[in-house]
Length: 137
Image (cartoon, rainbow, N blue to C red; front, side):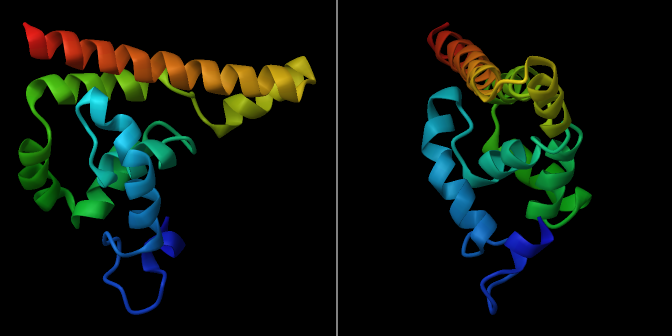
């Protein structure tokens, strides 16, 4: 995360202009129907592939620390979108180590890719349904 947040040279660390910001902006529209279509949420979920516990740490880094995180999150998340984000982060791909175990157990790239895309879809559709139905009610 440090490297992607620091490049290209001359940009503010972990800013929207950094490589990590560009990566987040690319994936943010996909997350928009789920209620958290801002680039920081996308980056946090991407780095959550390394380990689920890094989702909150990544957000803290992107917002400049724990004190700034507690100020920024209420402006970006509604209670409903925060719940949808929590569901997404709990249901999407467990972590890179789990993907490796799936590959080792199945000895198949096809089944490994299926499990990755299936869990991504389950997480995304669950979060989207929660947010969209909750928005109606």
